Length: 224
Image (cartoon, rainbow, N blue to C red; front, side, top):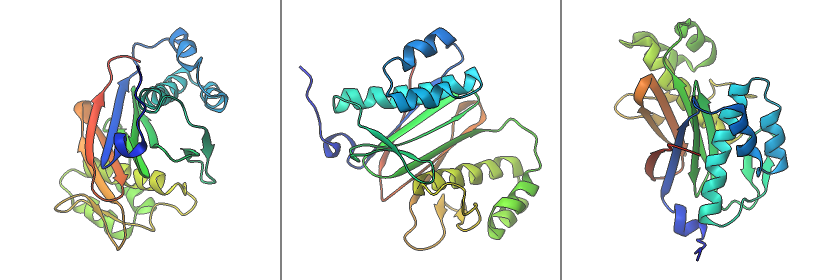
């Protein structure tokens, strides 16, 4: 017998972060995964040009939908905010998705949330990017850091996660707010959300933005 739970029962002061590696998935797997998706998400997934992008999107939403069906017995209707952020209309479960390389991510919570993941594997002009897109103080801290590449990626994931948290998209850029990793990860200013950043295996960094204090659990899924 399935016992359905309320939002408070399943997610009060909790955040679950689901991770899945898509490297062994095929196009046939994709067809099976999205078969029961809501039409708007199925279409969004199928519209991705590259198979890898379709698989990453499908894996993220599959983890979300499986969580919903397991905990509340159904998939709530999805809407899209003006900034492009998807959300459940009823607000029973809040979620955010991300991906990098072969890793798909889905974070779920009982309140607003934003997640981003990136891997340290490309040589770029990190200082140039920080100077162009970040707040001046962030750029100065990255410039002075012992490991510019790693520090940049921590700031990048934090700022992307914040933008996903607000749902505003990139219309205001990335330099109107400031993250800081001195002592502990946080955002500068009053009434700012909480920031959690962690280094995972294989040089991945993940940042999570949320309200208040939460118990955070990272769950690596072995299969979908």
